[in-house]
Length: 178
Image (tube, rainbow, N blue to C red):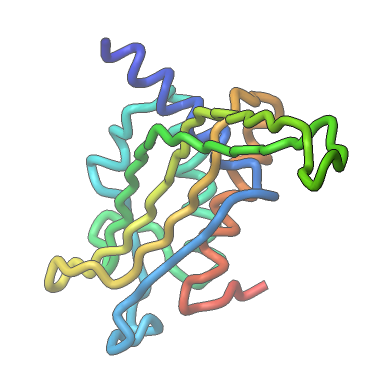
């Protein structure tokens, strides 16, 4: 069962990462001055994220890159802790189409028939949550979320994950220094 969960979460993260259709949202504490934070590290939960090891490392590396671009340095006694979560939700999309066939006007009435078609599309939507927690008071100061309809696309995983994490961090209060 754990292997199935790890495989499912790995597929989720790969699919979330196809950047063209990742929807990104974020929220942060507007009273916090992010320039006061200088260091970061990952929570134990982020280091143990229940996905395939290669993809976990890809995500951790991508987040590290984005944090460093914003001037934070990775350290064992950090100002910020980075926590990661993944989630999935099964969704159903239904579309109804009505077609009119054989219309003709006969004795003051329209004649013909209609045919209703209902298309049902079931899909899985996955989300990657990136949380930044102030270690001084253990409060969440920023959360970025990337959400996407999942597909089992496993090509170019390194690049896909980097682009998705970069898109999530595009809404961080501090812009990259490059």
